[in-house]
Figure 1: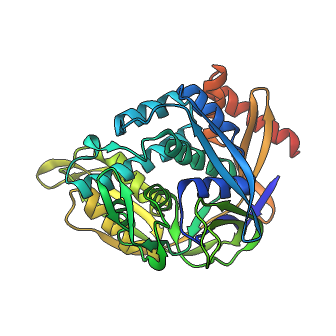
Figure 2 (figure 1 turned 180 degrees about the vertical axis):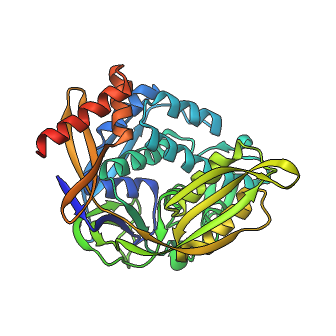
Length: 394
């Protein structure tokens, strides 16, 4: 049983020498995530590739190296081709959605650089199966580690130039810089890339950028990079620990009334807001002047996220104004427990006060994955998981 109470699990990425997809995947596996789910996904995708974790040592630091052996010929894939591969991978909903979001961020950044649309972008390095394995491996590893929050240190970039299909490009590469737009970065006097486009897209999708959070360190993992530097170890350090969370506190409720937006765009808007740190996002139907149907977009977030949330709303919606006010929020203490069902293991989320459980619910993603895999009703899996939890907590 993992008891959190007023504690939350924090994953912090300390970018000693930048971030690449293979470094991040190796560091996450060094924390305890396995690569078996990735091996199974690649097999279902039908690609000719194998993955391995190898022990290594960099500047005296024991670490892991993530290797992908691709046997396919070099291929140029578009976003639609990669989405098709993800559809065949048989993933649970959350890692599937987050992996696709990383590729979309990459496509959008490349589209800005090349003056075209994300759909027209042909991935070259990122379209190769090793980069696909890096991104998918990170998504599946994070799903196994289940952190409540992911933070990262300031992204580091190198200098000089890097070779590409289009010729030599400045470092940081244009797509990397586009992905890190709006984030403070730091350049080191190192010749070559430190943070790659894939690394930048993963950081942007998953992380809040801050210094070391106040936390009790529990696990430390190091992922090795390919190059060697004289003045620093080329590793990414991942740290898993617990942070004390306040059960009540001041937050901000941001609202906007929208009556002229394509409804299909709301899903992407909400996904962006959640990825930037919103605690909750919802839509409420309303009637505006001249009897026009509309919706109120509501966002609950920490006060220090106000500017970022407003920027996302203005970029991704048709509204020309937002309003906000501070609110007080009180939360129950939370904990998490694994239970066994006849189809597999499921997490049960428990909430309560003073050590007494007041409510419990089976983790939807776990139950949905088992229901799909075994062809049984989702409700049956959820009911059995809750029954198993009750039986073990009488």
